[in-house]
Amino acid sequence: MPPLPKRKYAKTRQRLRRQHHAVQRPKLVTCPECNETHQAHRICWACGMYRGRSVIELED
Ligand SMILES: [Zn+2]
Image (cartoon, rainbow, N blue to C red; front, side, top):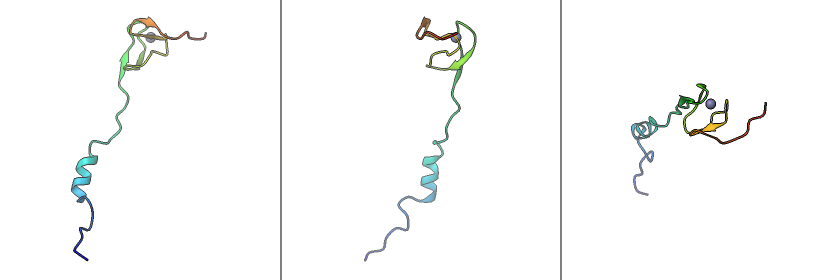
């Protein structure tokens, strides 16, 4: 049997790759309609608007 590497990737290689894997907190932007904060590229759950038009009908 030939000599085999102990591991597929060196510890440093694995760590260098994984240093970009951290989960980021969601980006919050201010709604231009109601000035509430909501996630970027998502509808505003306070007023139901997205890109200046009403997307859903909110109860109450
Ligand atoms: Zn809004």
